[in-house]
Amino acid sequence: MSQATLRTDRITLVPLSDEHLEHEIELDADPEVMRYLGNGRARSREEVEVLHRRRLAVASRVAGLGFWAGLVDGEFVGWWILEPPTRTDQGPVEGQAELGYRLLRRRWRQGLASEGARELMRHGFEDLRLTRIFAETMAVNTASRATMSAIGMQHTRTFHMDWEDPLPGSHLGEVEYAISREQWLAHRAGTP
Ligand SMILES: CC(C)(COP(=O)(O)OP(=O)(O)OC[C@H]1O[C@@H](n2cnc3c(N)ncnc32)[C@H](O)[C@@H]1OP(=O)(O)O)[C@@H](O)C(=O)NCCC(=O)NCCS
Image (cartoon, rainbow, N blue to C red):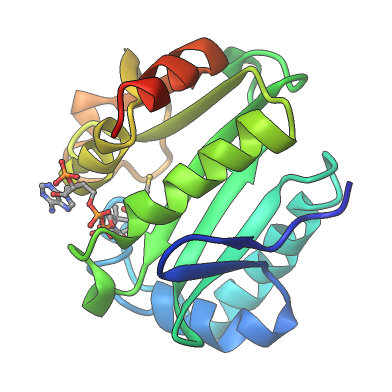
């Protein structure tokens, strides 16, 4: 199955492509967006061009998974991802995906990250038959953790990684949140 185009009330989620590169560059050029990511600083155009190619390559690893650009009224607002696990401690590739999201700062706090993430969860469990979706972030990334909780994921572990250039707050570790298909079905049934 190739990567699907998905829709929510406000967002159209389209598979990431070359036409989104300039938006990715704008996103990663904002130091506030990048505060808890990578080296914790804005990225150059050249750095994002390299990452863009890696992002596109995710779609060829497991059918149906990949990056999605989110458009509201035809305008790019950010990207979402469902990616197969990349480290052994994340568990098997089969049946699993890691959820992620990154939005332009002017689009924060409008319920968009959670709206897009809910649709990716539905797509993952219903259409792609995943059994578990997880997400990771720095323990100090309050906004990301709040989004994970808002969509029904639960904190499953706190762990420590060996970073070459640790960011402020990294001594508190990384957190994993997760939701199984059964938990998602129960959560959905309880949601009006
Ligand atoms: C994380 C991020 C995507 C959240 O996007 P958003 O569109 O503002 O999130 P939403 O509006 O959907 O909010 C989801 C929930 O998180 C809460 N939330 C969002 N930002 C918050 C913050 N800074 N502090 C506390 N709660 C926050 C919202 O209140 C909402 O909770 P509720 O549904 O219980 O009311 C956005 O802040 C971002 O792009 N950050 C930079 C990139 C990043 O760190 N990505 C995650 C990497 S793992």
